[in-house]
Length: 185
Image 1: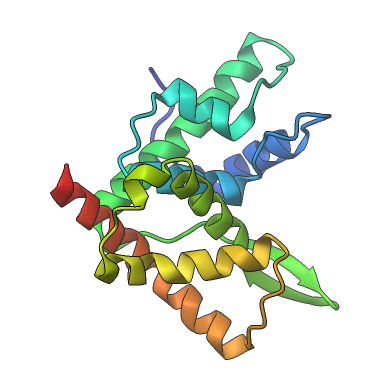
Image 2: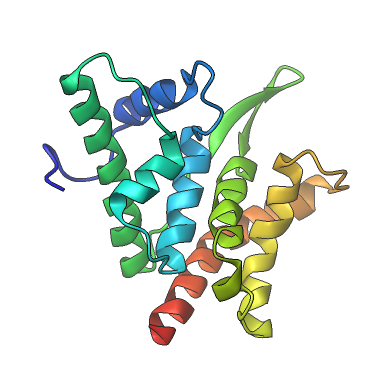
């Protein structure tokens, strides 16, 4: 799929994509950008046998575009997001989950739960493969799964220091799982 531009999305482009994804108007299937980034990361990490079109459909369902130009524009953004994730995982050292800022009691916080939730959507979508994950590698998945529970409104009791520790483990978890699945391919 040809992409008009290449390279990672700028902050403005990421915000534009997120606004498009959030403007679902009755389409509950669309994922906000942090979930979409996590979902795509989970697909890439686990080497899910999905085409780019299937991955896009999973991220945004059946969107209604204003015109062909908007369709191409948003498709380019999503493909670039995907390509950037692939590149960062291959590099191994520079990968960072996409976090969003949320306001909580007047304080701005960085939240990783949506990314983790998206990642776990990819995992649960391929349970047969991920169910064979050895115990050592399951420990890499544990921080992602635990933070995803916070997003899913599960009754999870977590102190701030535990949350911070788990978020610090996320880049290494994603890269470690990616490397494990690479060796299995």
